[in-house]
Image (tube, rainbow, N blue to C red):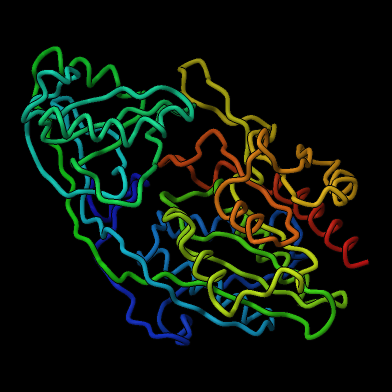
Length: 429
């Protein structure tokens, strides 16, 4: 998996952003601006923005693609007439040069387990932890959330076995590797592969065949991520609309709908503020435990909860398509929306309004609680006491290299945009 490859995998060259606090991103990076000629809530217009977001490729925090997305959103916000600020934050980040896992019969689709430890080895493949010294150990993880809990434990098991490197097998609907990570560098160089390559790896192990394992890069102690803040309106109740912008992969379905809806609601507010003060926040740092959102909440840029009438969080997998296995076993798109994501709020009084506004969609709003826990940034906003509603959840290509713009579409985006506009207009009514 080389830098600049066209297979959609997350490879970037090492590059840092030469910015300073308060410096506009627009003057520092090139990001095309799409001229909007239709209603911002129109499905085709929304999908154009989603496709633009996806076109930047994988967007890990601090990467050139991540910076380019932030620059594009800042330019779009300024074009709408908003008062815009680009606020930097610093994170420790691994700058990936190359990652690859090659078997004698060809390459394996992989993703580095974050936070990576660099390493290279050509050695036999094994599934036997008692005979893994100097070898590339493969651990087949359980399905579902059990895999995420097992990942850190598996790394420690590989370390104690003396393995030279580790490959974790995840099981997703697409058969592709599920990108995930931890905050500290791995004890052993580790790559993630998908269930679709499990048989190939077992064959290599049974034949004592060697594989080529490569994970190259270096740690940047002070990588820069950017939060884009856009303000519209000078008086009235304050409405915050947030979306994460960085991602493990291309994230056309995980992040793309949220970014497209964020832009649409911003343009709608610019045309008619409806007597409100709007704050649109686009945060990098999502995959690093919400680093951008945390930096914002801990700064004097964040409003106090009592000054916010509504916080709308445009999180993961809002308008994605359901896929089903075809005759060849590969996932094929359907004309139905995915129902895996959730619409959650911390205000029970909002449930009737949300249910009415989102009745034409697949979302059934619910109060967040032990049986419906909020995750990611949405959990942060609930915890900080903001009156919030928002989206979170997976879809069929969630956290995989196959999460492209094809996982959404105009027919899925427009009903959500209209529902958001109805509910926010009602709250401001």
